[in-house]
Image 1 (cartoon, one colour):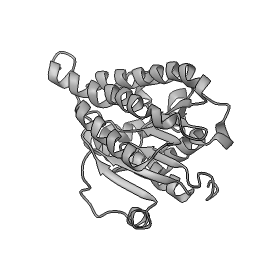
Image 2: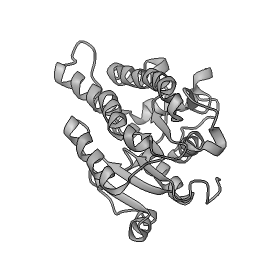
Image 3: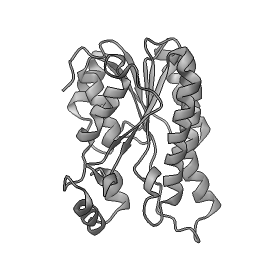
Image 4: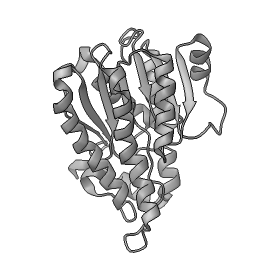
Length: 256
């Protein structure tokens, strides 16, 4: 695991940190000495984990909720972050979900717009809002969450979700080129099939088992498998010469 001092006193923002991969990313940043602002789209439905309770009490973590299905939610989050930090060093754009499985001939305009707003537009809006703080950071970095489906297209009903992740991947590469003169690195983590609430909601047990059999490592991934990739890409010491890249974390799923 990474050194406890790797991100000592660095200011890190993680969106979509209420559960799953985002929560584990936030936990590992805290373990490495960072001051972490966690954003959740919805309030916790289960007891707050001990690590977060401790970090909040010690003033090493901040937690707020904002609905990214509208631009107002992003604006509210950015305003609160700016009231707490004069600069940030790492932005992890992780918020997003499939919303639902919508077949192409049944997809409504409202469904299309909701998926695009949550997974694509909110990333642009959050990045735009927080760039002034990132420009004041030390060796600032942005790490965006995409998906294996950005390359494969996903499965039935996930076409728009997959397309939004492809957008974020391309947007990140363009952003990396644009922000390089300012010393801001931009990269992506692309999880494969990860056993989180996401797949509990949108994939059947039979579908997940069929997928597992196609993965060379013969198991689904976990949030713990994914989180170190975010810390690696956020660390100037470990990846200071890496920008505009997508790190695939999928147990070999893409090579099959």
